[in-house]
Image 1 (cartoon, rainbow, N blue to C red):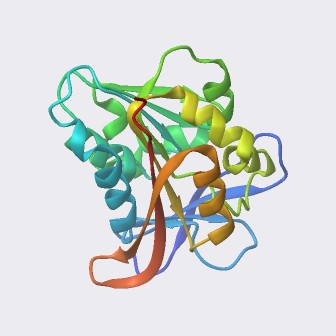
Image 2: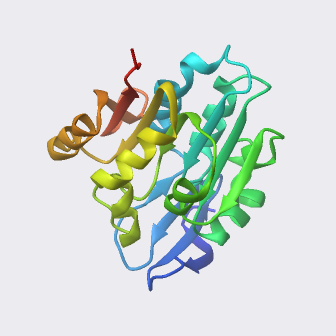
Length: 228
């Protein structure tokens, strides 16, 4: 197989945007139908793994750590979280598109090692914003690998996540010194200021799509300040 073959497609709930899943040999790509380029590609996931490391490295020795991952995608962020946290952790992953969950249970799942089947994983089928608004309890880390970062492009409702109201909601959902880590296609000074206005201590990390090469992406690492 030396060319891409579309093996499935699905509309994003609440929109007329269609996602396609394509395969070429052992490689997979998720694309927006009619838009050039890949939304995700199984060969480029280093920045997603770094996202998990920045958010969860301190949780390896924390008993019963609670983690929320916004966006399942190809499963690489979830897999990296599971490799980082302990055996008693609970990881909730929210995915808006039912077909993406199905793909991860099927052929696509082999790329990241089938993290949706890990006993520590719970899949929430729906909008991560709704989960943040409704679910009781608090998290040690919240990771957002949703859309294209603060400049949402596939689902307009994602804009709430990156608004001041959304960030304040996440701040309240964090345990002391908890971390929100947000993947973004690029730097965004306005968003950095918004994180600081919310009360976070903020770092910006630049990472490559592949180790040492590929596109440069930005990860916002925002830590809740310790109350005195």
